[in-house]
Amino acid sequence: MKSMLMAAAAVAVLAAVGPSAAQGQARAAAAPAGRPTAADAKAFVDNAEAQLEKANAFAARAAWVRANFITVDTQWLEAKASAEQNELATRLAKEAARFDGVQTDPVTARKLKLLKLYIVSPAPDRPGAADELANLLTKLDSTYSTGKFDFKGKPITLNDAEDVLAKSRDPAELKTVWEGWHNTARVMKSDYQQFARLSNEGAVSLGYKDTGALWRSNYDMEPDAFAAETDRVWKQVEPFYKNLHCYVRARLNEKYGDAVQPRTGPIRADLLGNMWAQQWGNIYDVVQPKGIASSYDLDKLLVEKGYDPVKMVKTGEAFYSSLGFAPLPETFWERSLITRPRDREVVCHASAWDIDDQDDIRIKMCTKVNADDFRTVHHELGHNYYQRAYKNQPVLFRGAANDGFHEAIGDFAALSASTPTYLQQIGLLETVPGTQEDIPFLLKMALDKIAFLPFGLLVDRWRWQVFSGETTPNEYNSDWWKLRLQYQGLTPPAERPADAFDPGAKYHVPGNTPYTRYFLAHIYQFQFHRAACKQAGWKGPLHRCSVYDQKEMGRKFNAMMELGQSQPWPETLKVFTGETRTDASAVADYFKPLNTWLVQQNKGERCGW
Ligand code: X8Z
Ligand code: ZN
Image (cartoon, rainbow, N blue to C red; front, side):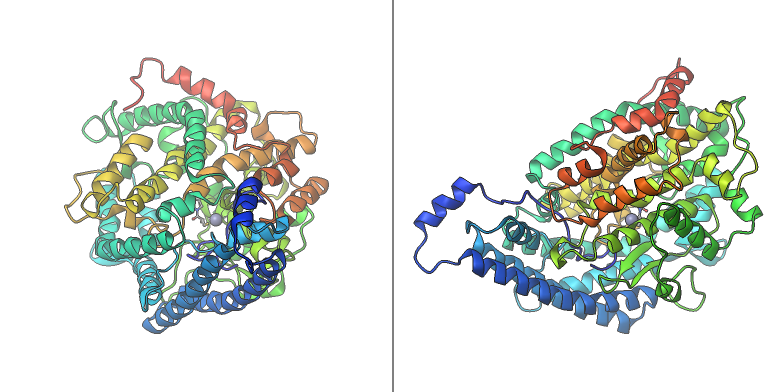
């Protein structure tokens, strides 16, 4: 597999036996003589895997080169390789349907299923369609990645704009920069519309209702059941999110006054310290609890202790080494992109790559020395260690149990790596604060982890609606803001222009990366953390636990990762946690003291929006 953010990612699917055995036998009985056998099916998947491996090796390198050096020529090369890969995978997915109902061994049955889910956006098989789709995707991703707008008389990048959103406390400036970035996405709307049309046509040709149904079919259950699962889990955490929203809104109101942020209703999206208001940790200074100071600030510690981007990545590697993982290969250091180059355009959105499905693992990120990127480094390395763990699986099983697992590995590591105990162990922090700082610590964590949940859900709610046709191109932006209001309780700083395409201002939309995976990951990482701490014999509160140096736990974690997508994800979850469902009770356990505290703080407020 290639980048964790590429359009054509291998993914996990339904239980080992596809159609029920009874259905299969019924069809087999009615089938004419000469129908394919189990041996034919096995030969087909073996051959399919060999072809995919070859196409992936080529497409991954073309994609890497384009993402590290965006020019017309590299875009052309990437689009050509990606179109060929898409054509191949889509053709194989169709051929796989020939074996529907054939009684194969369970491994072959699972591989046939996975083959039909291999491509995020399959191409229609008319001449030229795969090329058109690939060109649109390369162009959308490149337009996003090279986007700039004028601020204070000079063009600025998203990286610069993110710094302003994180640090400025001037509402007029925040609004200008927020609008500046969001308006860069307007040019993408018609390409996105055409992309959605083509992708849907491809998905329908594979037997899915639309592209959204294809994406929802990746979780070892029926697509409708999966949508219902995400609703169920959201309902588990929604009350907590609403408590946090209520508390933060009150502090913003105190800081900025009624004219900027009213005490009731939605929160202005540009005031939360992040371009998409998806993580709010950057405004901790504005919302910190009165009378309980936090004795340290990770942003400052990293700078004071002289961290640079490479040292951040080395520190991340050392955390994984402490769990018993082998060091990263020399080529990781030679080939990764760790800082933003000055002389060329690159895709700065962080990603982890597995170029040859073996040892050529790399990251690509424009690392800044701050707390956000300290966590992102652990996040990206988590992808690489997962990729390495499942490299000996057959091609179609080289992937996460489900895509939420892939996103959760590194975040799980970062939960331990964010504890003051660990920061002290690696010399970043002098003394570990006592329990009086639990609320400040948990509030910081919740500003990132709990604030994220509704955003993690709504990005694909919007795309599911676009793909199903429920949201028409005229409604792209208004429906986006309906969902932003409904789930996050947010509003734009001012009315949006008629031609705005605000979903396009979030990387994963032009980057065509499904997003529900991050919602799931924000649940799974706490399930992993709770199980890991239990294995390590931890008896204290969950948020104080760090599994640094726990080699036996690390071995068991790696054993789960080695399974790749060889079996349905609930079985893989069970291997490490003993649990078989996505379950937010671990989130509740971790944050329990904070939720209680928030409820007290919110007394007298009119929560909700
Ligand atoms: O895209 C990412 C990673 C790469 S897989 C940096 N994340 C999501 C985002 O930035 O929107 C991690 C958290 C959510
Ligand atoms: Zn990721």
